[in-house]
Length: 298
Image (cartoon, rainbow, N blue to C red; front, side, top):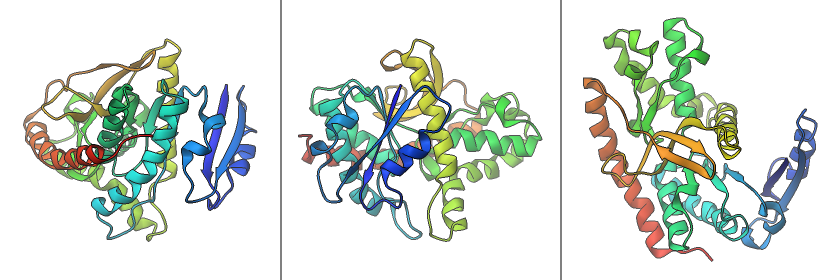
């Protein structure tokens, strides 16, 4: 295996240093760092880094600061994402792209539509929502006094605020929690990202838990690519609801997403919340589609 690390020359730690550090892990894998001067174009710097990649994880963009709207964030981060996606389209068009660029709800539709415009498969652009699942499992475990490793709450919808919809009724442990505790638990999962931003006092957002969730998703993609199918929740182009993009359970296999799984049975609380989530998500998807109309990949 081969792992390539890429970052800008303004990064706190140079990519060569991150690569040297990761290069000591007990894995049959070579690690190399690549750097680009800030303000330059990734497509001019990433040929060696991206050629032959099967999976590209993109944790790019600026983190959300307290008081920053997701619109402000989108304007900045869509441009950053586009530069990297453009390079992937040229040097590893068959690779699966795991997007960890906020706001995911708008960035993924924007990038997937640009891929489609370029004649590439928009299903290769996947929003990583695994952290919502990880949090839901953990919080249910805390309430129920159970090991979260044996809890698996599907989280559908989107990856921000009310669009995050944990389906507690579909997990054997979560469904034993009293109905009156569910709305608060639901909010806890939705607001968890903001809780971390506030706890860090504006000095960052969720990074360690996100790295854990990103690694879990990445491992599942790689297992799928090597013929061992895995099921994870992910946000992508979808026909599961009447919205063109949605997070649901997906089957990861050879080539990436091979199947989208239906939402399954929802209880009354979840059915009501689904409509609320869709109303919010609709506008956020539209922002991404609008961006793609006026842009294209080199």
